[in-house]
Image 1 (cartoon, rainbow, N blue to C red):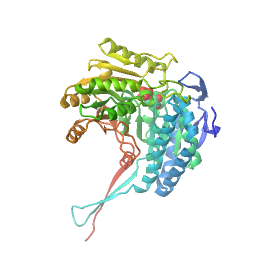
Image 2: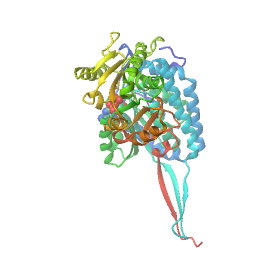
Image 3: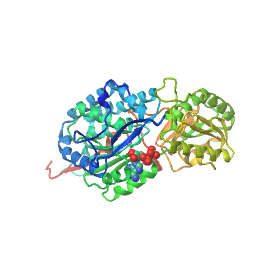
Image 4: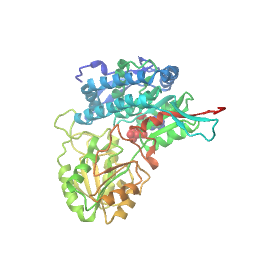
Length: 486
Ligand code: ADP
């Protein structure tokens, strides 16, 4: 890999301001999902390494918490600038280990950095409150204090941004953090650590432990009494396990879990806008985002026209190695991911759906699946209930608004939903009826550091980003000042 700063490619864990091999001495390979090529080997951290990271974070906590907000803001600001300065290298590392095309990797670095910039600003606005008092001899005050050491477990689909979205608010609030990235994508996490080190976070404030033994490392994070909060982004299945584990020490949790986003196109939609929005929300990262449209619900009157135009656009994607400038869609993360997508498509085809385009694994490599549009999908198919996490768009048909809302809400998930209509009354009715934390209205791209990201139902707890994002990392403390004689 050609980098301007080769030292951003790290292969040891970052604990207490030091680069450390695993206590066990073990290492694990990191592979390029486009071709299986081994990029490097990284220290395979385990329970002892995570324990050391938590101890370091705990030791650094009191001093970090008592720094002035301005000092924390300045270090975060430096980290932001370094990330932007080394954006090309970070994108190259990200594409090499994750597979998304370079343009998308570059966009992720910008997106990830935006959280660091935003929370560097918010660090100075963690204001308390003075409340009206019930009697003349009292004054009621509320202050916000850092929650304490934060443990973060992050996924492989956004190896940069899912870290900054947790680390930036935690650090801004005065929390030290220990991070366990997904073992598929440790290099982006370690590169961020290298830049955090350069930015000047004191030793122990920011720690990254990579490793393949996720459940063992996770157990240390969830059981340690030194950890006050767990922030997780990943599957609903693992999120539930972690919440159970956190119950024993009543840890606060933030959970960004799976999704099953409906994308509703009403007869009165601007069809060009709907096609563009569906493309953007479905196929980004080859369909591997938790807010990807999972079920495209199209009203009767517009169904055939939408299907034809959408499929024509989907045929324009060019699959390839993300580093190849011709490619507009990369591979899936693993062969198992590709197997799962294949099984979901086969299930739909066996129950009466038909592929207008795609429908199979691609011939260019083991991890590639053809960009696919399925017609005549029905709720009896697995694609209606399960998160596809691949470049497959099933089109369902509905008759009226009530039916669309009922179909959209017929899932345990509640992360993102999208709908297209030009009727203002419908905009409000549908927006209020959808049981989702994020709603795109005539818009397929909703994410921004300025907006709250998070889900309802089994999609999670808490919000990341925006002025609300800091709330997940602070405790409210109520001070009752009594005995006043005025
Ligand atoms: P995905 O389907 O995106 O891989 P996962 O929920 O399996 O979602 O993984 C998200 C993160 O959770 C990764 O960092 C992974 O290593 C970690 N993880 C998986 N299983 C466990 C577990 N039992 N305990 C703690 N972390 C886990």
